[in-house]
Image 1 (cartoon, rainbow, N blue to C red):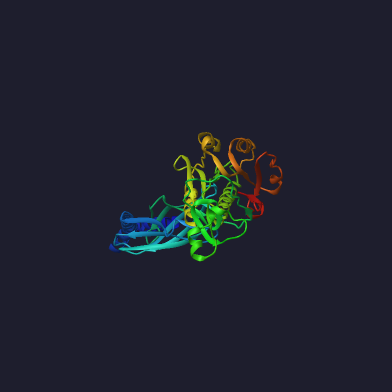
Image 2: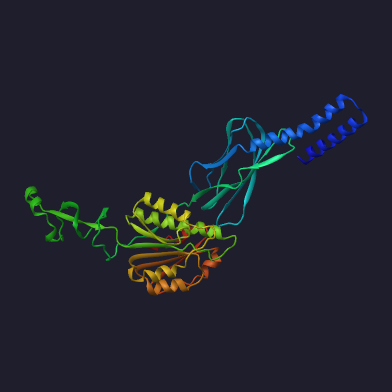
Length: 398
C-alpha cells in the first residue's frame, strides 16, 4: 500500500511538471485525472466503511477438547460500493494461558450484501477460549487507502473437559437421609418407606418383612425387599485457585476439571447423587450444585468452566469450610486441588466430618507426586500427575 502511494505521488509530480512545461489541454486533463483518482478512492472507501456492520458468531458456545469448532465473521455492507479486499485480524487465547495466538483472513465484500467467512479453532485443554476480531481493514481498489471497521468484537467458547474411566469403591454407609425421595433401582436396602422388590422367602429373612396378604393368595411366603436411599450426603469440592502462574497453569486446571468429571461420572454410574462445590469468579461466591444424572452433571461442568473470571481470582477453600463447618456431616468428601501445601489437607483431616475423606492433589510430574505427604489420620491423599487421571485415582473410596 505504501508503494502505491509513492507511485501515485510520483505520477502527480510528473503530470504537474508535464503541465508546466507543455501548455496543452491534454496535460491539464491528465493532471486533473491523476489528482482525482486517489480522491475518489478515498471518498468511496470512506463512505463504504461508514455503512458496514460486523459481527462474530459461534454456532455452539461449548466445544469438546481437540475437536474443531466453527467461528463465523459476518460483514454487512449497506452501501452500493463493493470492496475487493478486507483484511481480518483474529486473536484468541485461553484465559488460563497468557499466550495470544493471531492469524489473518481475507475476504471480498459485495455491495448491498452480507459476506461471511468461517474458520475453525480447537483447544488441547479445557477452559474458556476468548476469540476476538482485533480489527478489519478494508481497502480501495487501488490499495492506496485503508479504513478500519469492526474493532474489538469478541465471542467466548467453553471447551469442556473429558471424563475418564476409573475403578474405585462406592460405600453405602450408615449415614442415611431420612427424608430421602431417591432410591436405588439396582440394590435393595433397609428403608421401609418404599418397597424395592417382592420375592420368595429365604431362610433367615425377617418375619416382619413377610407380605402376609399376598402370601395368603399365593400359598407361599412372599417377602418385601425395602429400598436403598441413594441421596446420602456426598460432596466433591473443586479448588480452582491457581497456585502457580506459569506454563503449567492451563494443564493443571485441565487435570483438575477432568478429575472432577471422572469422579462425578463414577458416582452417577453407581447411583450416588452428590454435591459439587466450587468458587465462581463471575458471581463472587461459592456455589453448590446438586448432581443426580448425566444431564445435571454436564450442565454443572459447563457452569464451572464459564464461572472462571479473567483475573483467575478464587477465594480460599478455608473460607467455605469455616462458614459451613456445622453443616458438613457427610458420608464422603473429596477435595481436588493443586496446592502443594499441607495446611488445607490437615484442616480437612481434622475438621470435616465424613466417613471417607480424599485429598486429590494435581502435580506437575511423578517426582512432585513422591513429595506429597500421605500421612493423615482419616484423609487419604492421592497425587494426580498432569494427564494421568485414571491411573492416579483407581483405588479411590467414596
